[in-house]
Length: 207
View 1 (cartoon, rainbow, N blue to C red):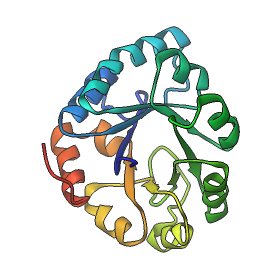
View 2: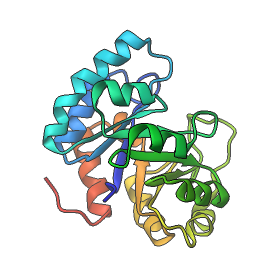
View 3: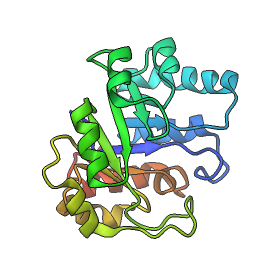
View 4: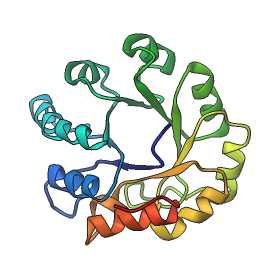
């Protein structure tokens, strides 16, 4: 079962200047169940340190994934990897990590999502649903596009891009299994409140 709420890290833009480790701990304490560490510009030594600092949260139920880096999944015994079109493919990642690892994929069309599912992905993110500051000038595609992209999809899709708690129910109605958020969690004034509100909109029990 794929968690229905995912936080994707972005220390450069999405934490309001607060330490990323602290942000994740605050979110996990409020019931967040999955985080994707996406820190592409962080030197390897610091990335290793960040992942090690977050690993103890797995004992509290947090699924810990990393963007693209299969080597880090193995080295740190993480729960899985999240892939993109410009990197290693889903089938290759599955063969390298094994059947128990979570393999996710960033899809931007119905065809992308269907191909990822056929290759063995456990879930996809579909984006951008709404305009977001991280992609200036890129228009959001909206809930109608999401409904089309998820039609007939055999694996869960997490809606991504400008997602907020108030938009969550509409995205579920359009076919999303859950949501993935960056700033709506990481830059929230009160992170536990934001996580609990997301979970309330998802119809999940609260911590």
